[in-house]
Length: 159
Image (cartoon, rainbow, N blue to C red; front, side, top):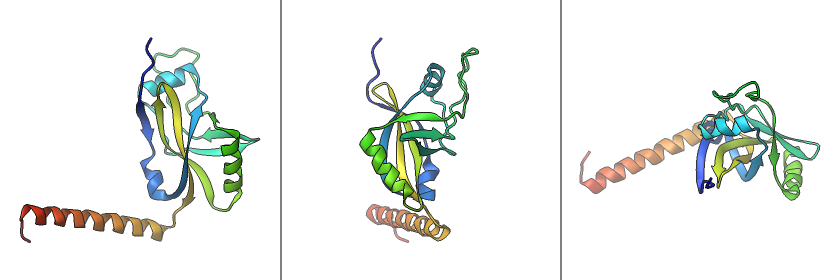
């Protein structure tokens, strides 16, 4: 069987970019069971409540929902079990130092297949306050309005 090439997105956490200020991103592999891989290949997962923690020098993913595989038998997996992430020791030691720093957390941004291997994009992030969220919404709206007006101007419409 030929291994699939390229990147296939399975799930994305769009709300994370709204709720957190992302300082750095990391790519990690996932330790999965067979039915989890089959459920992911079917395109089913949710990263909404997910976060990562470092325990005993290993990175663990908590709260990510991968539903049971529909054709699975008694060997099906638990949907919200904690899953081990595969990262280099140097990256883990950097993350240990940064997460001990106040206010930083590890959150999953996207789950995807890269050349047939399940990968997750983790972000080292700091939580936004409500006024930061309002400022980013206002900035996004003003950019959208400017682009709309520029398009109208280039098309020759008058307001």
